[in-house]
Amino acid sequence: DGGITQSPKYLFRKEGQNVTLSCEQNLNHDAMYWYRQDPGQGLRLIYYSQIVNDFQKGDIAEGYSVSREKKESFPLTVTSAQKNPTAFYLCASNQFRGDTQYFGPGTRLTVL
Amino acid sequence: AQRVTQPEKLLSVFKGAPVELKCNYSYSGSPELFWYVQYSRQRLQLLLRHISRESIKGFTADLNKGETSFHLKKPFAQEEDSAMYYCALSLTQGGSEKLVFGKGMKLTVNP
Image 1: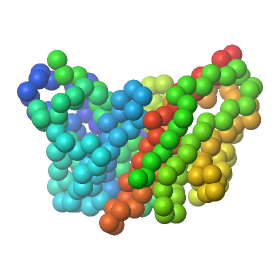
Image 2: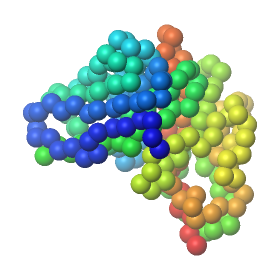
Image 3: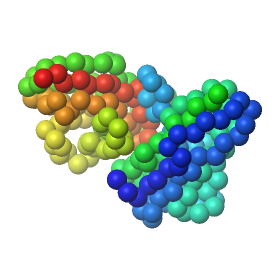
């Protein structure tokens, strides 16, 4: 299960605070992705990055921001503008188009 | 619009029974389809992809372009097959590639 890690496993945030979720991979993958998983909603794409210093909005990018300064790292910031941030967040990576995406263990964010 | 539909949210069968998890897609291009599985307390992981045309853990899935379907089948379900199953469609847009997931289906195999 190694190769892509997310931290922390559980995160609590007060309303109005920004919080950053970490995603690191040592698989030398070019592409990285952030998804949000809600019961009954499946996985929805927040942001993705095909290469360092470049990223694109997914289907539900509002209230989130990302950076891709290093190939192995793709942190996600959940801002106070995100109306319903409590969810399970999954990070994934893959090498090239059509390749299997490998998923991290996830971070469960709870807004108090 | 590109879409993946898994019409059933829950499926409960007894051990040894056949299972079919339905997946339909909407995509104007040439589809690349995947089934991902999430066992309890484990990471989401690839089960199989249509391009490899192989059987994994007894599961098979055939792409039917006429019916725009990619149903997952297993002739004899086992208790360890209990999990969440997600069908996914790979899209290439503007040089970028991403996956569109269905909403998932929970399979429970009872002893």
